[in-house]
Image (cartoon, rainbow, N blue to C red):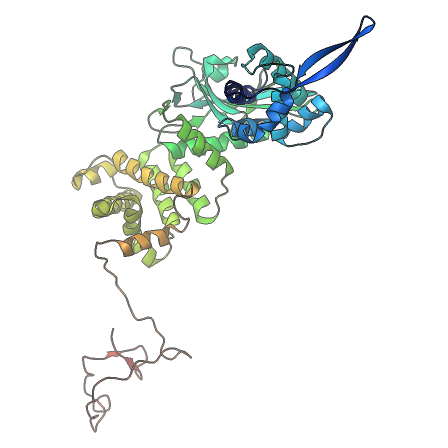
Length: 476
């Protein structure tokens, strides 16, 4: 078997189809028969041939609505064209036609639809021979340090999966090495990231594809939950059952923090996120913030990572001018906390910025936090990291608009808490087309006979001097 995912998807669909077809027979449906002539011994013999293909075709609309149909169609994909050509000389690339042909082949000449396990394996072998003729199987692997998985294997789709190292025939340098490449067999085996590909015999190992897929998976792991996730400096690749050859990977730097553990219950959510990240094409502020977030994940010290995370927040909330920076903590609190908890989160964010200022001037982060009566620098940094992670993940998954600044303002406007807005008059009254002040709604007092400025009198407190002494404007 060369493709476990394809095998399992087709088997699941065949099992569900067998149950549906068998139930129809029990409900009174009958398989049509044809009388076939067979020569023999000087006389013509006749036999009844069950038309199972016709029976299956009549029920295809219901068969394609089975839960396993979508996965089977996706797994077979464009390989249906090759399989159909082998079966009947057709050239249709529709995976539905390929699945229908598989069922017809599975129940050819059968008078019932009980699932035939042995025959399915033979039919599946035909599918693989059709799909993988003149191809070779390749694999590229890389150790993931700091990662533990509850299940031995996690399939991520399209030939990519995670597996506990000692469950795979892999080199000891991949299974037992630490982040520096030193091999130590006393600990737990590494989790390996594996990409399997079937390629033409004259093609090269898919190393470039593996680097891209592995790097996007690393991003998904970091966005999923905190932890010291990193790739080793070296990977390995091989063709068919040949020897493993070392390949430089260079996907990430060292990481800090505790181990990253994936439970069995979390596995479907990670698979979904990994698929979203693999297809995402972030740009502009989102891409820059994501890059800063990952830089922070690879910093050796928490206080070094703090600036990366705060810069990511400034980028996400478009805090590039004075007004944006002034409202930054308020907007983050609106997005990351419930309405009754926003003030508390805002104070924590302000503390993080104050801590960054202290570190930038060479001060002690721990001493500063002790003086204000709060926790360790690590607890502050981890909290900021989590807010950046949540915002980036929600944007990439489509739960939040990329315009986080606008989304935050909408939440603040519709909330119950009062909002202090400081405004200033920025109108240029001398500009062409600028609105003129409304006429006063009261009777103006008569002007004095002598101008105040000409008489050397200090101007009235109701007016302010502009830079030009010949002009003055009313205050806000």
